[in-house]
Image (tube, rainbow, N blue to C red; front, side, top):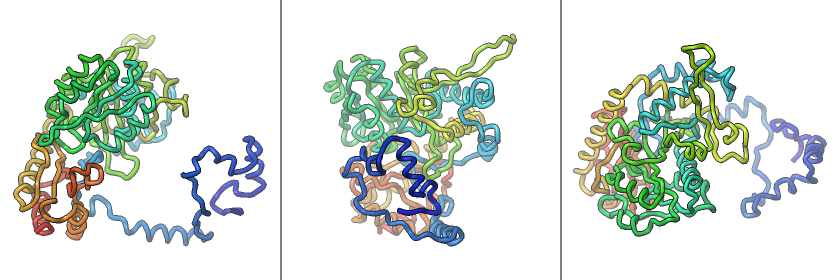
Length: 459
């Protein structure tokens, strides 16, 4: 490729000098570490150079085909859920002192550190554990970190997870811990979806570093025997790790209260929009124990006394163990956006308070159960697939209607409704099944509209 108007340093002489400076003879040698099966065997299909205005027009025309979540009545969830965001959340997280702060230090970032300390404090109270780390990219990243912590603390080499665990989070967990440890799936009881405790008891051993569950589960139902799972893990010397959706804790017991040693989860419900690729924030909490803290590999904001009596200061700990200093050798990763979302979460939690979160969780559960009850009365529609208590999300099977999830969703879309996520490929045993999400943003009128439309497209 010759000189390109949009690609800096594309002049051949400049590229030659750059390659010489890093000690390689050609671009091919530079990329030789990439496996051949991942290499593109043809030239890139790049468009010819065009004027900036023409490029802008073409991109705007393409983007105009998109529809936002507010254009449709959406019931998508599966890890990123629709919630109401109080205006003050964005008002505060867009303040210049937060937006422009990058990593800073104890002398320049005291305001941000205090805000993050408040985030950690409120999250710790919510999950029932004392130590909460710096925000991470998402739940999947936090889950991977939890696995790494368990391996480091126990020195063991296997982790048990539910068979119906979120495939995305499972993939990241595997990437974090393999080849040092093996991930083993625990079967579930067919009609309830609950983890098979007998199977777990028979399989767990002195090689097991941790047992991980999600509560609520990826498919929306609650793992009712979580305390018993904790006992099985602890009796074998393993840790008990729990992944959570934080708003559900307005109704459910804190994981720390039923035996969790490590808790991770997704903070997106705490004031963050359903933005594609960005508005996610993982959190990780553990016992306030030196062995746990040192194994976390994560920054933590702490409070300390100062020389001036009655005043306190805020600082971070363990910076050398994070991406901010270790970079490619770091055991975990985070970013500026995650810190902004943590501040947003602190604002959101402070607005609701304990009573507000409880009322919100109750409202979500009531609305989702209303939708389940109405949909279950439709001919051929099975709701939910598992006989268990559900929160916010639930499975809808269209198998007996003779229609696939894709067909149903395409017909619903014509009526201005975005149906549930198709989980048929993720879990073949749930063929023609979708995962629906109902939160406080869905009114009774919305839910009745969904039921009417579903009846029409499946009839």
